Length: 177
Image (cartoon, rainbow, N blue to C red; front, side, top):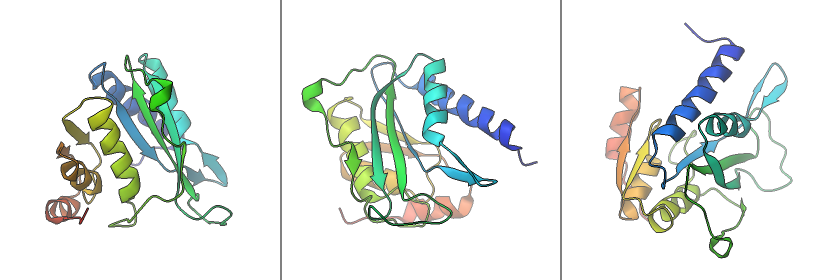
């Protein structure tokens, strides 16, 4: 049975909280979220993630805007940008280790709902170099873009996907990186 909007928002916030609570305190949970429109109103999924993270004592290590379309482009249905946010309960990023807050392009998308390859690479490098992690877990992995990019950056990757068709595509995905 589909959730109504209020129940979906509550599920989304509680899921973000659960992810942040389960990540090692010195590591990060990275979320890639595109806002959605319901009944003519935008729902800021980045805000919902922040709400869940706050509820378990996780703080925002960084928040990036990823351009899905060139600046100044009018889009319909989906916004021209996505939020990419990293949360941790104890990791702090020294100011000298910052990176750009706006990614002018997201990179190639192996399927329409994919996180672009440039955004995936930024996340993989951060996890590897700043969080000292060796494994990426993608709980909604789709066709496996993040998994393939993580592997290309020397990380182990675990994907979870409800759709058997998407799992088969993820297992077959090879990206030239």
